[in-house]
Image 1 (spheres, helix red, strand yellow):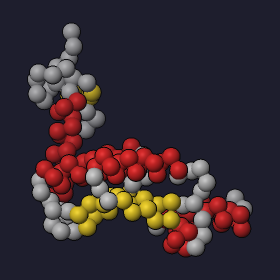
Image 2 (tube, rainbow, N blue to C red):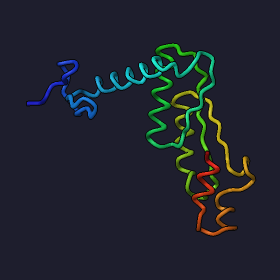
Image 3 (cartoon, rainbow, N blue to C red):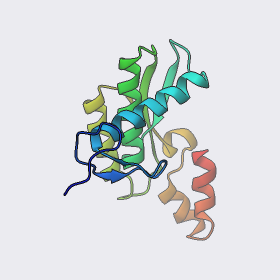
Length: 148
């Protein structure tokens, strides 16, 4: 017999929520997840209406979920935020290409402006050019410093 969600007591439980160990359905998980984020934003006064807020967008699942949740909550609760996606192109041939395509899809999906900044534009160097100059030793240090 399928287990029932311990939150709504009607839908089939799909996951055990790590935070509470409760069996919950996907619908309740999404609701609780979004409500906890909303509570954190409001109780900590993280934003003010009219602020421009960048969502770091790598094209991975974490930044995609963040774009989804922030767009959803901004509309639902009328935060009045000016959200946009911000992505960094390090200039490593073949490294960021696919993920930038995902970021561009997210831009369309969430109807958010997208700003892509590159190491070349910021520092007049790409990571490929740096590696060409210094070799593979310590190149991660450059990338980490540039990113920050």
